[in-house]
Image (cartoon, rainbow, N blue to C red; front, side, top):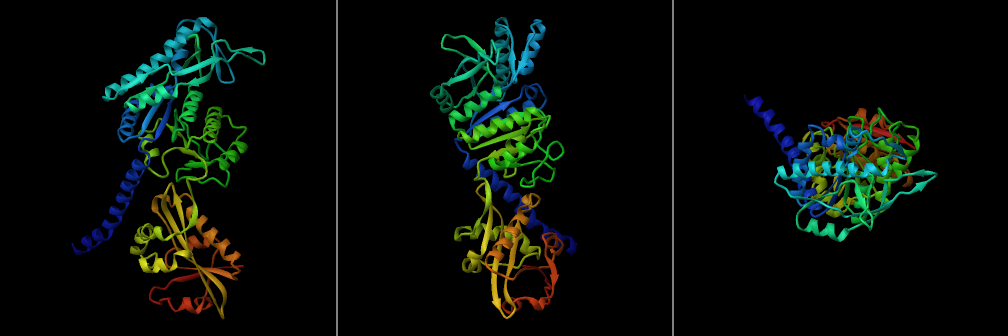
Amino acid sequence: MSETKSINTFLKPFAIHDKAERVRDVLRYIRRFKNAIVVLHIDDAIIDSPNFTGHIRDICMIHEAGLRVLIVPGAKNRIDEVLSESKISWTLSNGLRITEENAMPLIKMAAFDVANKVMTSLAGEKYSAVIGNWVRSRGYGIREGVDYVTCGEIDKIQIDAIQTVLQNGFIPIFPCIGWNANGKPYNISSTQLATEIAKRLKAEKLFFLTANTSINAEDYIIPLEIILSDEGCVPAMNLEELEIFLKVNSATQNINTILLLKLAKNAIHEGVSRVHILNGTLDGTIPCEIFSDLGSGTMIYQNNYCGIRPMTRDDIPAVLTLISPFVQEGILLPRTEQELTETFTDYIVYELDGSIRACSALHQYNDEHGKQAEIAAVAVEKNCSQIGIGPKLVQFLIDKAKQNGNQSVFVMTTQSADWFEQQGFTLDDISSMSEKRKAKWSAERGSKLLRIKF
Protein backbone atom coordinates (compact mmCIF):
# COMPACT_ATOMS: atom_id res chain seq x y z
CA MET A 1 0.00 0.00 0.00
CA SER A 2 2.75 2.42 0.94
CA GLU A 3 4.69 1.47 -2.21
CA THR A 4 1.63 2.19 -4.41
CA LYS A 5 1.09 5.48 -2.66
CA SER A 6 4.76 6.35 -3.18
CA ILE A 7 4.54 5.62 -6.93
CA ASN A 8 1.34 7.63 -7.31
CA THR A 9 2.88 10.51 -5.40
CA PHE A 10 5.86 10.41 -7.78
CA LEU A 11 3.77 10.26 -10.95
CA LYS A 12 1.13 12.84 -10.09
CA PRO A 13 3.33 15.96 -10.44
CA PHE A 14 4.34 14.93 -13.98
CA ALA A 15 0.76 14.18 -15.02
CA ILE A 16 -0.44 17.50 -13.63
CA HIS A 17 2.48 19.33 -15.24
CA ASP A 18 1.72 17.86 -18.68
CA LYS A 19 -1.99 18.65 -18.40
CA ALA A 20 -1.25 22.17 -17.20
CA GLU A 21 1.10 22.81 -20.13
CA ARG A 22 -1.56 21.73 -22.62
CA VAL A 23 -4.14 23.99 -20.98
CA ARG A 24 -1.65 26.88 -20.93
CA ASP A 25 -1.01 26.38 -24.64
CA VAL A 26 -4.72 26.63 -25.44
CA LEU A 27 -5.20 29.72 -23.27
CA ARG A 28 -2.12 31.36 -24.73
CA TYR A 29 -3.33 30.80 -28.29
CA ILE A 30 -6.87 31.98 -27.52
CA ARG A 31 -5.40 35.20 -26.16
CA ARG A 32 -3.01 35.55 -29.08
CA PHE A 33 -5.56 34.98 -31.84
CA LYS A 34 -8.41 37.01 -30.37
CA ASN A 35 -9.99 38.84 -33.37
CA ALA A 36 -7.50 37.23 -35.78
CA ILE A 37 -8.80 36.64 -39.31
CA VAL A 38 -8.83 32.96 -40.34
CA VAL A 39 -9.66 32.06 -43.96
CA LEU A 40 -10.65 28.42 -44.30
CA HIS A 41 -10.83 26.62 -47.65
CA ILE A 42 -12.71 23.33 -47.39
CA ASP A 43 -12.31 20.72 -50.12
CA ASP A 44 -15.78 19.55 -51.16
CA ALA A 45 -14.70 15.94 -50.65
CA ILE A 46 -14.55 16.86 -46.96
CA ILE A 47 -17.92 18.62 -47.12
CA ASP A 48 -19.42 15.36 -48.43
CA SER A 49 -17.68 13.22 -45.79
CA PRO A 50 -18.85 12.01 -42.36
CA ASN A 51 -16.17 14.22 -40.76
CA PHE A 52 -17.80 17.43 -41.95
CA THR A 53 -20.17 17.76 -38.97
CA GLY A 54 -17.23 17.57 -36.58
CA HIS A 55 -15.31 20.20 -38.54
CA ILE A 56 -18.31 22.54 -38.50
CA ARG A 57 -18.52 22.20 -34.71
CA ASP A 58 -14.82 22.98 -34.45
CA ILE A 59 -15.23 26.02 -36.71
CA CYS A 60 -18.05 27.26 -34.49
CA MET A 61 -15.86 26.70 -31.44
CA ILE A 62 -12.96 28.78 -32.76
CA HIS A 63 -15.45 31.44 -33.90
CA GLU A 64 -16.83 31.55 -30.35
CA ALA A 65 -13.26 31.80 -29.00
CA GLY A 66 -12.98 35.16 -30.78
CA LEU A 67 -11.36 34.27 -34.10
CA ARG A 68 -13.02 35.79 -37.18
CA VAL A 69 -13.65 32.95 -39.60
CA LEU A 70 -14.32 33.13 -43.34
CA ILE A 71 -15.16 29.99 -45.35
CA VAL A 72 -14.44 29.25 -49.00
CA PRO A 73 -15.96 25.86 -49.94
CA GLY A 74 -14.67 23.93 -52.94
CA ALA A 75 -17.32 22.81 -55.41
CA LYS A 76 -15.44 20.70 -57.96
CA ASN A 77 -17.26 17.43 -57.26
CA ARG A 78 -20.70 19.04 -57.23
CA ILE A 79 -19.98 20.88 -60.49
CA ASP A 80 -18.76 17.61 -62.05
CA GLU A 81 -21.99 15.94 -60.95
CA VAL A 82 -24.32 18.65 -62.24
CA LEU A 83 -22.58 18.97 -65.62
CA SER A 84 -22.48 15.18 -66.07
CA GLU A 85 -26.20 14.90 -65.33
CA SER A 86 -26.86 17.51 -68.04
CA LYS A 87 -24.44 15.76 -70.43
CA ILE A 88 -22.29 18.88 -70.72
CA SER A 89 -18.63 18.15 -71.37
CA TRP A 90 -15.62 20.12 -70.19
CA THR A 91 -11.85 20.11 -70.46
CA LEU A 92 -9.12 21.14 -68.06
CA SER A 93 -6.22 23.49 -68.78
CA ASN A 94 -3.78 24.70 -66.13
CA GLY A 95 -6.16 23.38 -63.50
CA LEU A 96 -9.10 25.42 -64.81
CA ARG A 97 -12.37 23.98 -66.11
CA ILE A 98 -13.27 25.06 -69.66
CA THR A 99 -16.91 24.83 -70.71
CA GLU A 100 -19.27 26.59 -73.09
CA GLU A 101 -21.37 29.56 -71.94
CA ASN A 102 -24.49 27.40 -71.52
CA ALA A 103 -22.79 25.58 -68.63
CA MET A 104 -22.39 28.68 -66.48
CA PRO A 105 -25.91 28.66 -64.91
CA LEU A 106 -25.33 25.06 -63.82
CA ILE A 107 -21.86 25.84 -62.47
CA LYS A 108 -23.26 28.76 -60.49
CA MET A 109 -26.08 26.58 -59.14
CA ALA A 110 -23.63 23.88 -58.04
CA ALA A 111 -21.34 26.39 -56.33
CA PHE A 112 -24.26 27.87 -54.39
CA ASP A 113 -25.53 24.37 -53.54
CA VAL A 114 -22.29 23.68 -51.71
CA ALA A 115 -22.24 27.12 -50.07
CA ASN A 116 -25.81 26.55 -48.86
CA LYS A 117 -24.84 23.17 -47.42
CA VAL A 118 -22.12 24.86 -45.37
CA MET A 119 -24.52 27.59 -44.23
CA THR A 120 -27.16 25.02 -43.24
CA SER A 121 -24.62 23.09 -41.20
CA LEU A 122 -23.59 26.27 -39.37
CA ALA A 123 -27.25 27.10 -38.72
CA GLY A 124 -27.63 23.64 -37.22
CA GLU A 125 -25.03 24.67 -34.63
CA LYS A 126 -26.93 27.94 -34.00
CA TYR A 127 -24.39 30.12 -35.81
CA SER A 128 -25.28 32.68 -38.45
CA ALA A 129 -23.55 32.80 -41.81
CA VAL A 130 -23.94 34.93 -44.93
CA ILE A 131 -23.37 33.90 -48.55
CA GLY A 132 -22.31 36.97 -50.49
CA ASN A 133 -21.31 38.25 -53.91
CA TRP A 134 -18.30 40.18 -52.66
CA VAL A 135 -15.99 39.04 -55.46
CA ARG A 136 -15.57 40.98 -58.70
CA SER A 137 -13.92 39.14 -61.56
CA ARG A 138 -13.08 39.40 -65.21
CA GLY A 139 -12.84 36.79 -67.92
CA TYR A 140 -9.65 34.77 -68.04
CA GLY A 141 -9.77 35.26 -71.80
CA ILE A 142 -7.66 33.57 -74.46
CA ARG A 143 -4.16 32.52 -73.42
CA GLU A 144 -1.67 30.71 -75.66
CA GLY A 145 -4.48 30.06 -78.10
CA VAL A 146 -6.83 28.53 -75.49
CA ASP A 147 -10.20 30.23 -74.91
CA TYR A 148 -11.13 29.81 -71.26
CA VAL A 149 -14.74 30.99 -71.89
CA THR A 150 -16.45 30.80 -68.46
CA CYS A 151 -13.25 30.89 -66.37
CA GLY A 152 -12.61 34.08 -64.46
CA GLU A 153 -9.85 35.66 -62.45
CA ILE A 154 -10.29 37.84 -59.38
CA ASP A 155 -10.38 41.56 -60.04
CA LYS A 156 -11.60 43.02 -56.75
CA ILE A 157 -12.83 41.84 -53.36
CA GLN A 158 -15.17 44.11 -51.40
CA ILE A 159 -13.13 44.24 -48.22
CA ASP A 160 -15.25 46.90 -46.47
CA ALA A 161 -18.43 44.86 -46.90
CA ILE A 162 -16.71 41.72 -45.60
CA GLN A 163 -15.35 43.60 -42.58
CA THR A 164 -18.88 44.76 -41.76
CA VAL A 165 -20.16 41.18 -41.90
CA LEU A 166 -17.37 40.05 -39.57
CA GLN A 167 -17.93 42.89 -37.12
CA ASN A 168 -21.60 41.91 -36.90
CA GLY A 169 -20.61 38.41 -35.80
CA PHE A 170 -21.52 36.53 -39.00
CA ILE A 171 -19.40 33.95 -40.81
CA PRO A 172 -19.00 34.92 -44.50
CA ILE A 173 -19.21 32.11 -47.07
CA PHE A 174 -17.75 32.59 -50.55
CA PRO A 175 -19.01 30.43 -53.44
CA CYS A 176 -16.40 30.02 -56.20
CA ILE A 177 -18.16 32.51 -58.45
CA GLY A 178 -17.19 36.07 -59.35
CA TRP A 179 -19.16 38.72 -61.25
CA ASN A 180 -17.94 41.40 -63.61
CA ALA A 181 -19.17 45.01 -63.53
CA ASN A 182 -22.16 44.09 -65.70
CA GLY A 183 -23.20 41.17 -63.49
CA LYS A 184 -21.84 38.40 -65.71
CA PRO A 185 -20.76 35.39 -63.61
CA TYR A 186 -17.47 33.53 -63.98
CA ASN A 187 -16.19 30.30 -62.45
CA ILE A 188 -13.08 30.97 -60.36
CA SER A 189 -10.71 28.63 -58.55
CA SER A 190 -11.78 28.23 -54.92
CA THR A 191 -8.20 27.70 -53.69
CA GLN A 192 -7.05 30.86 -55.47
CA LEU A 193 -10.10 32.69 -54.11
CA ALA A 194 -9.25 31.67 -50.54
CA THR A 195 -5.65 32.78 -51.08
CA GLU A 196 -6.68 36.17 -52.48
CA ILE A 197 -9.14 36.80 -49.63
CA ALA A 198 -6.43 35.97 -47.08
CA LYS A 199 -3.92 38.23 -48.83
CA ARG A 200 -6.23 41.23 -49.13
CA LEU A 201 -7.46 40.93 -45.55
CA LYS A 202 -3.90 40.33 -44.28
CA ALA A 203 -5.21 37.23 -42.52
CA GLU A 204 -3.39 35.72 -39.59
CA LYS A 205 -4.11 32.24 -40.93
CA LEU A 206 -5.10 30.57 -44.20
CA PHE A 207 -6.22 26.94 -43.93
CA PHE A 208 -6.52 24.39 -46.73
CA LEU A 209 -8.65 21.56 -45.33
CA THR A 210 -7.92 18.83 -47.83
CA ALA A 211 -8.93 15.26 -48.52
CA ASN A 212 -6.20 13.00 -47.17
CA THR A 213 -3.24 15.29 -47.89
CA SER A 214 -0.17 14.69 -45.74
CA ILE A 215 3.32 16.01 -46.35
CA ASN A 216 5.44 13.13 -45.13
CA ALA A 217 8.67 11.22 -45.68
CA GLU A 218 6.86 8.36 -47.40
CA ASP A 219 5.45 10.40 -50.29
CA TYR A 220 8.05 13.17 -50.63
CA ILE A 221 11.78 13.78 -50.51
CA ILE A 222 12.40 15.57 -47.21
CA PRO A 223 15.55 17.75 -47.15
CA LEU A 224 17.79 17.42 -44.09
CA GLU A 225 17.00 21.02 -43.06
CA ILE A 226 13.35 20.13 -42.40
CA ILE A 227 12.32 18.48 -39.14
CA LEU A 228 9.87 15.57 -38.98
CA SER A 229 7.32 14.59 -36.35
CA ASP A 230 7.22 11.16 -34.69
CA GLU A 231 4.81 10.07 -37.44
CA GLY A 232 7.26 11.08 -40.19
CA CYS A 233 5.28 14.18 -41.21
CA VAL A 234 6.48 17.76 -41.74
CA PRO A 235 4.90 19.95 -39.03
CA ALA A 236 6.25 23.25 -40.36
CA MET A 237 8.43 24.86 -43.01
CA ASN A 238 9.66 28.42 -43.31
CA LEU A 239 9.92 30.01 -46.74
CA GLU A 240 13.57 29.09 -47.15
CA GLU A 241 12.85 25.44 -46.32
CA LEU A 242 9.80 25.51 -48.60
CA GLU A 243 11.93 26.65 -51.53
CA ILE A 244 14.27 23.70 -50.98
CA PHE A 245 11.32 21.30 -50.59
CA LEU A 246 9.71 22.46 -53.84
CA LYS A 247 13.01 22.15 -55.71
CA VAL A 248 13.76 18.57 -54.63
CA ASN A 249 10.14 17.48 -55.19
CA SER A 250 9.69 19.10 -58.61
CA ALA A 251 9.06 15.69 -60.21
CA THR A 252 6.44 14.52 -57.71
CA GLN A 253 3.08 13.26 -58.92
CA ASN A 254 1.30 15.01 -56.03
CA ILE A 255 0.47 18.03 -58.16
CA ASN A 256 -2.40 19.31 -56.02
CA THR A 257 -0.24 19.47 -52.90
CA ILE A 258 2.52 21.29 -54.77
CA LEU A 259 -0.08 23.78 -56.03
CA LEU A 260 -1.24 24.44 -52.45
CA LEU A 261 2.36 24.92 -51.32
CA LYS A 262 2.95 27.45 -54.12
CA LEU A 263 -0.24 29.30 -53.14
CA ALA A 264 1.00 29.26 -49.54
CA LYS A 265 4.32 30.73 -50.61
CA ASN A 266 2.56 33.51 -52.50
CA ALA A 267 0.22 34.23 -49.57
CA ILE A 268 3.10 34.52 -47.09
CA HIS A 269 4.97 36.88 -49.42
CA GLU A 270 1.84 39.04 -49.62
CA GLY A 271 1.31 39.46 -45.89
CA VAL A 272 -0.54 36.35 -44.63
CA SER A 273 1.12 35.32 -41.36
CA ARG A 274 0.74 31.54 -41.69
CA VAL A 275 -0.70 28.98 -44.08
CA HIS A 276 -1.78 25.53 -42.90
CA ILE A 277 -2.36 22.41 -45.02
CA LEU A 278 -4.49 19.93 -43.08
CA ASN A 279 -5.79 16.42 -43.65
CA GLY A 280 -9.55 16.85 -43.32
CA THR A 281 -10.14 13.13 -42.82
CA LEU A 282 -8.74 13.55 -39.29
CA ASP A 283 -11.28 14.60 -36.69
CA GLY A 284 -10.21 17.63 -34.63
CA THR A 285 -7.42 18.68 -36.96
CA ILE A 286 -8.50 22.36 -37.02
CA PRO A 287 -8.38 23.12 -33.25
CA CYS A 288 -5.24 20.99 -32.88
CA GLU A 289 -3.53 23.08 -35.53
CA ILE A 290 -4.63 26.40 -34.02
CA PHE A 291 -4.23 25.72 -30.32
CA SER A 292 -1.00 23.70 -30.13
CA ASP A 293 2.61 24.39 -31.07
CA LEU A 294 3.22 21.44 -33.40
CA GLY A 295 -0.34 21.22 -34.67
CA SER A 296 -1.75 18.42 -36.78
CA GLY A 297 -0.80 19.35 -40.35
CA THR A 298 1.92 21.33 -42.11
CA MET A 299 2.34 25.04 -41.46
CA ILE A 300 4.13 27.46 -43.80
CA TYR A 301 5.48 30.57 -42.13
CA GLN A 302 7.87 33.48 -42.61
CA ASN A 303 10.84 33.15 -40.23
CA ASN A 304 9.46 34.16 -36.84
CA TYR A 305 7.86 30.93 -35.67
CA CYS A 306 10.73 29.21 -33.93
CA GLY A 307 14.43 29.43 -33.28
CA ILE A 308 17.35 29.65 -30.87
CA ARG A 309 18.07 32.92 -29.07
CA PRO A 310 19.98 34.09 -25.97
CA MET A 311 18.15 33.79 -22.68
CA THR A 312 17.01 36.97 -20.94
CA ARG A 313 16.15 37.67 -17.30
CA ASP A 314 12.47 37.65 -18.26
CA ASP A 315 12.85 34.00 -19.36
CA ILE A 316 13.93 32.75 -15.92
CA PRO A 317 10.44 31.71 -14.66
CA ALA A 318 9.73 29.81 -17.90
CA VAL A 319 13.12 28.05 -17.80
CA LEU A 320 12.62 27.02 -14.17
CA THR A 321 9.24 25.53 -15.13
CA LEU A 322 10.81 23.78 -18.13
CA ILE A 323 13.62 22.09 -16.20
CA SER A 324 11.51 21.19 -13.16
CA PRO A 325 10.38 17.71 -14.42
CA PHE A 326 13.99 16.84 -15.38
CA VAL A 327 15.21 17.83 -11.91
CA GLN A 328 12.53 15.66 -10.29
CA GLU A 329 13.58 12.70 -12.44
CA GLY A 330 17.22 13.21 -11.43
CA ILE A 331 18.31 13.98 -15.01
CA LEU A 332 19.33 17.58 -14.21
CA LEU A 333 20.72 19.23 -11.13
CA PRO A 334 18.39 21.78 -9.53
CA ARG A 335 18.85 25.47 -10.36
CA THR A 336 17.49 28.32 -8.29
CA GLU A 337 16.15 31.61 -9.52
CA GLN A 338 19.20 33.31 -8.00
CA GLU A 339 21.60 30.97 -9.83
CA LEU A 340 19.88 31.60 -13.16
CA THR A 341 19.93 35.34 -12.51
CA GLU A 342 23.71 35.18 -12.04
CA THR A 343 24.39 32.92 -15.07
CA PHE A 344 21.56 33.65 -17.54
CA THR A 345 24.07 35.00 -20.11
CA ASP A 346 25.46 31.44 -20.41
CA TYR A 347 22.04 30.14 -21.51
CA ILE A 348 20.23 29.84 -24.79
CA VAL A 349 16.56 28.99 -25.26
CA TYR A 350 14.52 27.54 -28.09
CA GLU A 351 11.36 29.57 -28.58
CA LEU A 352 8.46 27.97 -30.43
CA ASP A 353 5.65 30.33 -31.39
CA GLY A 354 6.29 32.66 -28.46
CA SER A 355 6.80 29.95 -25.82
CA ILE A 356 10.09 28.56 -24.49
CA ARG A 357 10.27 24.84 -25.24
CA ALA A 358 13.96 24.07 -24.63
CA CYS A 359 17.09 25.47 -23.04
CA SER A 360 20.78 24.77 -22.55
CA ALA A 361 23.88 26.50 -21.22
CA LEU A 362 27.56 26.84 -22.10
CA HIS A 363 29.84 27.39 -19.10
CA GLN A 364 33.49 28.42 -19.65
CA TYR A 365 36.56 27.15 -17.72
CA ASN A 366 40.25 28.01 -18.12
CA ASP A 367 42.96 26.54 -15.86
CA GLU A 368 45.84 24.07 -15.96
CA HIS A 369 43.59 21.61 -17.82
CA GLY A 370 43.29 24.11 -20.67
CA LYS A 371 40.45 26.19 -22.01
CA GLN A 372 37.34 24.06 -22.10
CA ALA A 373 33.57 24.55 -22.04
CA GLU A 374 30.71 22.58 -20.54
CA ILE A 375 27.31 22.12 -22.14
CA ALA A 376 24.81 21.88 -19.30
CA ALA A 377 21.10 22.04 -18.47
CA VAL A 378 19.96 20.56 -21.79
CA ALA A 379 16.18 20.33 -21.44
CA VAL A 380 13.54 19.90 -24.15
CA GLU A 381 9.85 19.84 -23.33
CA LYS A 382 8.49 16.32 -23.76
CA ASN A 383 5.96 17.30 -26.44
CA CYS A 384 8.80 18.66 -28.58
CA SER A 385 11.41 16.00 -27.85
CA GLN A 386 11.16 14.19 -31.20
CA ILE A 387 11.55 17.06 -33.66
CA GLY A 388 15.29 17.63 -33.47
CA ILE A 389 15.44 20.59 -31.07
CA GLY A 390 17.93 18.94 -28.67
CA PRO A 391 20.57 18.25 -31.34
CA LYS A 392 20.15 21.79 -32.68
CA LEU A 393 20.81 23.30 -29.25
CA VAL A 394 23.85 21.10 -28.65
CA GLN A 395 25.34 21.76 -32.10
CA PHE A 396 24.77 25.49 -31.63
CA LEU A 397 26.75 25.40 -28.38
CA ILE A 398 29.49 23.18 -29.85
CA ASP A 399 29.97 25.76 -32.61
CA LYS A 400 29.98 28.55 -30.03
CA ALA A 401 32.58 26.72 -27.93
CA LYS A 402 34.80 26.46 -31.02
CA GLN A 403 34.37 30.14 -31.81
CA ASN A 404 35.36 31.00 -28.23
CA GLY A 405 38.70 29.26 -28.72
CA ASN A 406 38.09 26.26 -26.47
CA GLN A 407 40.19 23.14 -26.87
CA SER A 408 37.22 20.91 -26.11
CA VAL A 409 33.64 20.84 -24.87
CA PHE A 410 32.25 18.33 -22.36
CA VAL A 411 28.98 17.25 -20.78
CA MET A 412 28.14 15.60 -17.46
CA THR A 413 25.26 13.14 -17.46
CA THR A 414 23.74 10.32 -15.43
CA GLN A 415 21.01 9.09 -17.82
CA SER A 416 21.71 10.51 -21.29
CA ALA A 417 25.14 9.15 -22.22
CA ASP A 418 23.82 7.24 -25.25
CA TRP A 419 22.10 10.34 -26.59
CA PHE A 420 25.24 12.49 -26.23
CA GLU A 421 27.32 9.80 -27.92
CA GLN A 422 24.93 10.11 -30.89
CA GLN A 423 25.83 13.82 -30.97
CA GLY A 424 29.54 12.98 -31.29
CA PHE A 425 30.73 12.93 -27.65
CA THR A 426 32.99 10.16 -26.33
CA LEU A 427 33.60 8.99 -22.79
CA ASP A 428 36.46 10.72 -20.96
CA ASP A 429 37.98 10.59 -17.49
CA ILE A 430 36.62 12.78 -14.70
CA SER A 431 40.15 13.99 -13.99
CA SER A 432 40.27 15.78 -17.34
CA MET A 433 37.74 18.46 -16.43
CA SER A 434 38.41 21.84 -14.92
CA GLU A 435 39.26 21.89 -11.22
CA LYS A 436 36.51 24.46 -10.61
CA ARG A 437 33.94 22.14 -12.17
CA LYS A 438 35.43 19.06 -10.50
CA ALA A 439 34.74 20.64 -7.12
CA LYS A 440 31.00 20.42 -7.89
CA TRP A 441 31.16 16.78 -8.99
CA SER A 442 29.62 14.24 -6.61
CA ALA A 443 30.84 10.65 -6.51
CA GLU A 444 27.47 9.71 -5.03
CA ARG A 445 25.65 11.10 -8.09
CA GLY A 446 28.23 9.40 -10.33
CA SER A 447 27.81 11.53 -13.45
CA LYS A 448 29.76 10.41 -16.51
CA LEU A 449 31.91 12.85 -18.46
CA LEU A 450 31.77 12.84 -22.26
CA ARG A 451 33.85 15.14 -24.42
CA ILE A 452 34.43 16.44 -27.95
CA LYS A 453 37.97 17.63 -28.67
CA PHE A 454 38.64 20.30 -31.28
